[in-house]
Image (cartoon, rainbow, N blue to C red; front, top):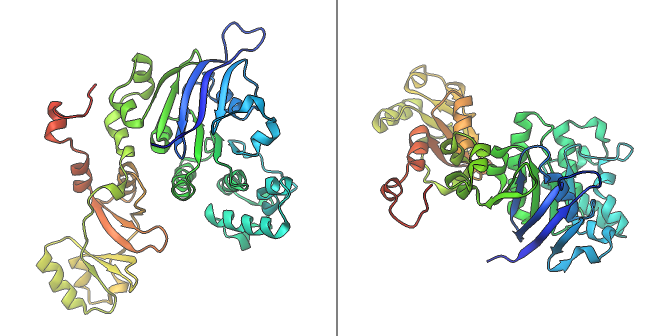
Length: 384
């Protein structure tokens, strides 16, 4: 069992002149190395709670422990250096280059220039930005998605144990947002930070969160649970309405592609004889073969009709485009299939692009079908 990195006990915030508290007696334990998402309607206290964790806002009452230490008893500046902070507006310094933005906290901590430069390049690589291209650019030269990546890199610069994120992807277009959500999950696999993330989007919460705290309109926790429990057993009518209909579809976001059995498409190499490939396709009875390079990276799909044209293998067929990494969810896989107007998606290693297997519409649906025990309510699982 992981230890609790953050503990909130009776956390309350009241503003003078307001009858109701902005945050009402919140208590929750946040395990080390997990992503906890605070989600709920506008005005429910999500951002206020997040800001109280690193004392950008002082609580009226209650306690906050970070790694066992009461943070209300330590200097707020020292506290903030122990936690990275990412906001929706990104907040990069416009007069500073990317490298200076990323290295601002290490500079404040007195790191030498060589160590800062090395850390900057390491983090830009981590968030998917080529250091040689981006370290000397200014924020205004970057897209919104690139700026958000720099914001994440800056938050991680001093290697804090805790990362606080306030709707970090909320201002981005859906495609960029989805891509950066996947990037965050990729980064988390390597760094294993304790992340508290504010979101208004239940689908984002389900995709990213190891645990989700649903805050009600009156600023208290309606349910704090795993995504699976939240979908299968909402604590009350408010949670059920907030999660909304389509819980079965949302459960697709709970299963990673790497956790299901993949199929193995028939593969061929560019130097193979087209007539031999055609015979092989007829023997296997599959709809197409997959052309791969000598590193087993997918290139093109070839049908029997393509092979009858007498062209070289790399000059016929259609390019293989529907590809996802193993960390992707089944929801991502389904979305990729529908976007590509196909019934199969290739699973490839996200580092070198090598083929790991494939997932078809049939195998995807099969992987989410309940077992006999689940259908009848038999076994250790809990039902609605």
